[in-house]
Amino acid sequence: MTVKAAGDAGAAGVSPGNADGEWLRVHPASPFVRGWIAIAAIGYFFGRDIFERLIQGGPLIDDRMAGRAPWLLAAGGVILMLAIFGFIMTWYFTRYQVAEGYVRVKTGFLFRQQRQARLDRVQAIDIVQPLLARIFGLAELRFEVADAGESAVRLAFLRMDDARQLRATILARAAGVQADPESPDAAVQEAPEQAVLSVPPSRLVGSLLLSEQSVFVLLGAVGSVLLSVLTGNGGFFLYLIPAALGLAAAYWSSFNKGYNFTAAISPDGIRLRYGLLDTQAQTLPPGRIQALRVFQPPIWRIFGWYRMQVNVAGYGAVGGNGEGGSRTTLLPVGTLADVMTMLSLVLPDPGTPDAARVFTMGINGSNNDGGFVTTPARARLLAPLAWRRNGYVATETALLLRSGRWWRQLVVVPHQRTQSMALHQGPIARRFGVADLVLHTTSGPVVPRLIQADADEARALFQEQAARARAARKRQTSEQWLAQVAAETPAAEPPAPNEFPAPNEPLASRGPLAPREPLAPSQDGPQNG
Image 1: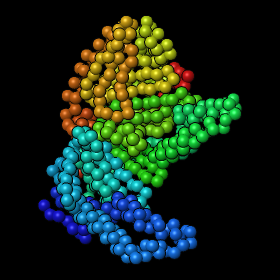
Image 2: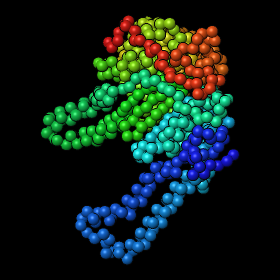
Image 3: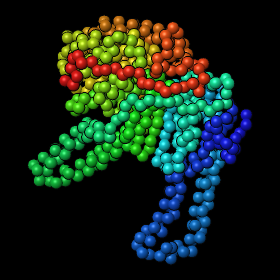
Image 4: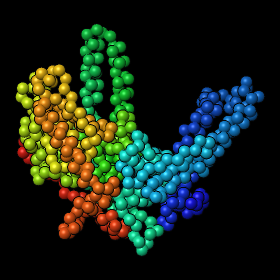
């Protein structure tokens, strides 16, 4: 193996003719883009007093510090030079390689570390651009693998074009696409894409204003006004200040991460782009989503809005913070038609000929609409409002779990993603003859749980779902998702316009991809009632 120097072609990314197994370096500006906070802290520590004296019209250097000023400046210069030297060494010892079905990253000059990830275990790939990186045209590449609790590999930073090309290379190899034998060293171009939906900023703002935290703050404001009027003490308004600041911060974070949200479909998978200051581009390969949830708060029902979240292996460890929340959001706010469009991308084979009605009833229906099996009437005292909503239905490819009367949700779990199950039955549930069935997938915001099903039906579903999961995993003959898609395509049928290329098809043959026809919402049953 050869090590490519910074001045060589492709030192800051993937060159069109780089050989498999070649070690490359990230962009030379990477450590400065990441470590600008340290430089700013050094400048603040040594320049704070000088800045304050300039504001007050005093001398540049205090008379008491004049004798020690040269030593302080020298110390500051030494610290700054050490920081810059550390940045340079960090860059010099950071290298990455794509070879032998793995991507490897070496970091550290005092404490060496090498991380690697199998390409056929790639779950999702993100291109992240913080504000400073966008100014310099750089991007960070992150991708998750099935057996990693955190980002398996993070490359920061590459030129934007190089990051896209490296992502295309990794996705192509993870998908099982082979290079053209006539030109094996040809650069892998980014697969074409077709936009399927976008979220208007006005709808995003409206969803934030109609969120639960807005209602709580409004109720708190009304309560403070009443208490102030009744007691004659205006101090109650002070309690609204931290709440208002927290609400403003939450609004800004959600708006910044959800702004300009767009979804597109490509041979690489589902591509999501979003962000105002810090932009992010995700690529979710087909079949890698472990579980999906469609959620509707009560106020959103007025406008028919929904949110979609997913569990993806590797994202669970960061699912609790703001970054993880945005990365596990498949649709921040959308209409029922948008939900059906995304469902058709995540689950291209719904496993039932009446998919539109089944999914629509799963989102908005009640009782046995769409074939759902609900909580028995004898247990309605446990959930007086939701017992007609709580239920399940199984298709050939997925299990659908419905729950909630005011906070409605539909959880979809592909059969092959069911890792384990558990039956829960407390003393009160045992008295009414009901039980909960919990499905275990990868960690994330979606918790698949069948609530208050008939105990006998829950036990039967436990056995049936275990059999369905085993059968679905047997049909999954390869970790390479593109090979699975090609294997499931009948040879006698002509390829559809939106069909993925076969694993042995040259990369150069990739053409435009049309999105599959989305599911149309069923007009039967309640929609927003």
